[in-house]
Image (cartoon, rainbow, N blue to C red; front, side, top):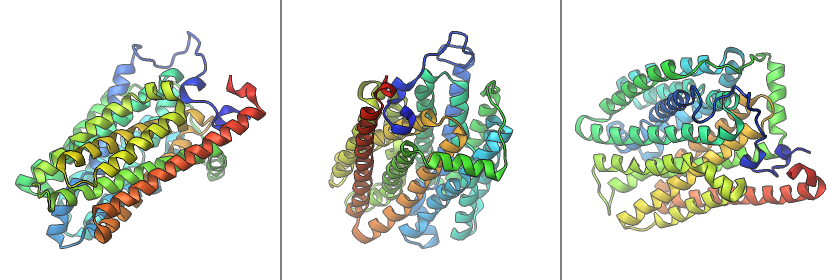
Length: 425
């Protein structure tokens, strides 16, 4: 039994030696900086668009006269659309190429982004957001598959960490910009500005991303796709990683969907611009995601997941205080823990998959964004029923799930190690 199937090896330790003649990209090599910056910009555009309404939910609730649980569908519809379409889009990337699919996905998503400000009702807003999320589905899985094919194995987790860091910058800048713009000109102008920012990122991405050199076209036959998906879902390690990604995102989606309501209400009563600036905390995620490789090198994959889960849980508990500094510190810990856990889990998926990497990554992304939709919806319902403590309770349960799954994986790895010790070397 291989290390990938048992979960016995860490990501760093599993990287095989690479011949000097390996033509794939590596830090300092030709094309690596352009590739990294291009995918960083793709991550910025993806998260800025995907969560463009999240910081604006109190204003959307006010304009349409709806509760948090209804307004939250403008976030849940986008992430749900992405979750549903990420697997079909990954199949298209196997046939037509990663760069082609990523370019097309961004083109459609930014076009929808320019239409969102003109939504005449909440229903239309939710519909447009769902279509936008479906379009963005071509980015996450295709990006990680592109990296797995074009970057040397030892540099993979760092490269994926930079892509995830782009996600965090996009999420942060989108919320900060929309917060201040909406305070002066309303939420419609705010999401329009994000649409324009995404257009610029999409154009730069297409101009900078190097043409793939190691892509081999696959089949679009449903039978082949179904067999690949079945193979991935039958792998215990991949199943655990998918569940971990979903649970981490349940925490994150719930917290950041509801935090705007909490901070605009008593005892804080913050204006919209200040609430948007709270999302500068995402910079912590940029750092934690880009340094995830070093964390895995010190603690191993499972140790890194324990650290990420513990940090997230500590942040959730701190955020219960009616003290703005403690709430901010809690958000720092939640954000740092989440992005570290996400970078570790997503890079482990790319490493564990021996074939059909786009589908393996797509299944992870699908689970991840299902977690986001669930977190946004359940977190908002819990907030309506029990206040911030209700949202925190949902998050703590999700973190407990991460820890439980990781413990189970550790035990399974020890059993496998006793049976096949040679696989650990």
